[in-house]
Image 1 (cartoon, rainbow, N blue to C red):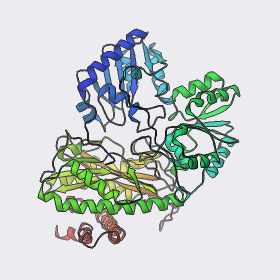
Image 2 (image 1 turned 180 degrees about the horizontal axis):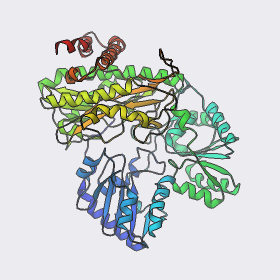
Image 3 (image 1 turned 90 degrees about the horizontal axis):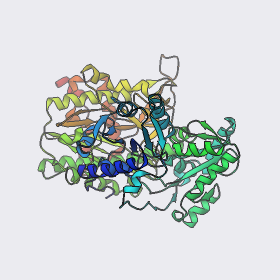
Image 4 (image 1 turned 90 degrees about the vertical axis):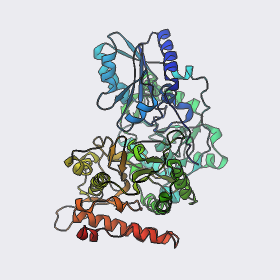
Length: 611
């Protein structure tokens, strides 16, 4: 299995570990300390030796921040993780604070006193994070102080060793462009901006730029590394040499100078000695890097990582790979759904069995390299936990007349997939069908949207929520996130959410996943991945419009659709989508599997007349 179902985290050690941390703070004269869920590369996934927030709090989610003060401690999470955080962190030790209802700066400003000193590890916080904290705390005479050496690392006596996975080259057939070509394009961008160099810290940017893939982190093909891209000459890649085979080293030697990670601080100092103007992404680079550059004499130019936008706009080879990966993945998901429909009525299934069988169907494809995240297999009330991770202790059986939410994906050599299906186990209630249909209406509103050039994800987010808002409902997560090309399942700058301010451009891939969650009962989410298409004229219109191509290929559970709530246009979209699924996936299935697909994809529109 690519994922483990062992119990991770929990409240058992929180009190003792917070007590140890407070002793450290007292010894160095700090009033508090921040522990984010991040590493020095600011990646969403972190290696086992960087799970500091988990070690301290018992919370295992992928996003969060702990603040430990002398008398109080808080765990900050967003709407995806409020239920999980409350279950995993000791409530006698940690206040669970929901972002954005209360921000960390606001809580800290109220909890600390004038003259207090708040410590943080500058390697684990971005420039923007530190700037935001300082802006809120400094007027209250609260000092924000960088601490050399992480305090959690001093206490973590059984800390795992760092990862040492081997690096591989990403074939040009799938990358579409060679590393030398990408480097030359970005160097021209730097010269135009009059920047001498850029520091590349995002691991997906490094993987994309040099056409390399690794295995240092769970479910993402990255290798821990930094890079410096000069406006002229050869870039420098700072990576542990023992991860490079002779063939990989030779390929990288053709386009870059390779250094051990220990050489990175010296390279930053050298930029300062030359008084270089250095591009640094404040949303992705650590405060430690910015401090090193400034102290050495470099002029820091804050700007977006130059890899971000060209990486997000997939080229023809990457788009072809995405389509192929989704057809392959769709066949695996359809086999799984057919198996589930046959096996669930017999009983005996649970959440772990579901996740294991789905992974087995995906593993049948030789192109699979990993899953793209831990499968969310949530039966009944567990489906209402947005980022639920099933473990041996939380594992629930599939019960009659309930819902099962399965959110999963694959890392294929030619593309990354992410799909959520909510499935009826037995006979759904009228409330389940009503809520599912409201979510489906929002999903269709996004999938069928046409929009002008310059439209941002935040401009479209309300499309997905309108039907739910009309019913007095909403969901506490974004409608969609960007997706990479055999890279991260969560990619920027594109997205569909209230905070997604990047314009959607052709070649970008985003998820479309509105949801509804009734705590203690069930969760509903419908997710497909969408490709932003080139602008096309519309009959009678005066300007071309962008639109989406749905990449995902798997049926949406017709048993949960209340056709009386659907408009003719919405039913036409759903029937057309199912027709494409049957056309594309049918030839990939065995003869005994095709009848299930035909039934699952049968038109719903005629049912409206008899409803």
